[in-house]
Length: 415
Image 1 (cartoon, rainbow, N blue to C red):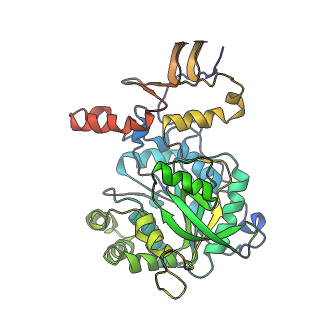
Image 2: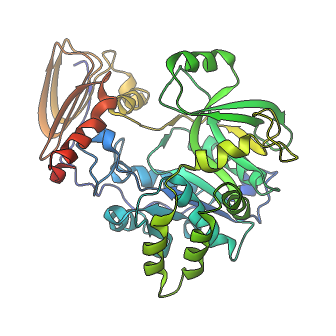
Image 3: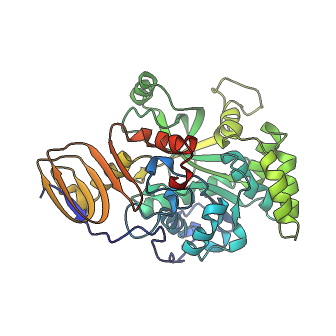
């Protein structure tokens, strides 16, 4: 047939069953870890996933969809964290449009730890909010920052690396980042330059020299050839006191705002204080706010242009990571799975039935429909109840522009 099909009857946005809460101690996964260290994962789930339109909408964003199976992306995120964390220690930062659905999909997570941002303020305030909340009672808690919409193939290796990172982050002011070994000169990811090896632990670690935002193609090729650069996975580990200290140092205007919110947490005034104060925080990513300035700091605090010891350690993200940043990335992810990789023509058709003739490298999502592909290559076709997307894998990074155009032309009901 030249394709591998999945029979789908519909797309309700409520896919998945509650996640199993089984837990394995950090000490078991990493004999060098301190099992007494509390670990509090923070799942960032406020994005709108515009590059996955029309399936992803404001009220049914990418992270609450089951893009590659039965469980949704955020359910998969929680599931791979449970071997090293208790569900009651997990925090989620999202928005009002998604909070109710996330509460339904993650019933194990306490509802008062699923926080809805009053306004989108990028990742620095979202990451730091949990740190200021935990600093009040347990400042040595190790906080992990995890995007809600990535995929990981090797969950056991992920847990092993994460356990080692928790142990490192519990010592001093160490910041741990997970860097993915690059396989191509990708311009859509940030890069981490690593230096000398760091002693200790069961997983190899290297000192971080600097962070570089998404580079031009020539620079990405240079990084790939150099052999000491990793992709930035967006996964970070630090103690609550380390992150709050970094915010006070590098974002002094933001710190008192988050302190005020944290002081109100658990009181009747929290919602009002949160709504009033949080939008005053600077709209800035944690990379720009903390990681880049900290990477320029040597042990004695003086800038060494990225050549000093930053106190940031990189662990290998060699666990089959994919950020699923586009329909092309989803197609690539599907083709790496055994049930799809058997198709020599590289077609992924998610539909009730299909006929494929002389077609290669296509991705089609049309639940409940019969689909025929004839003589086409590299297409992306996505059908929902009220919209149809037709593009190519080459151009699918531009799907977000569709959402922008719909918003600017008064068709907000479609986003």
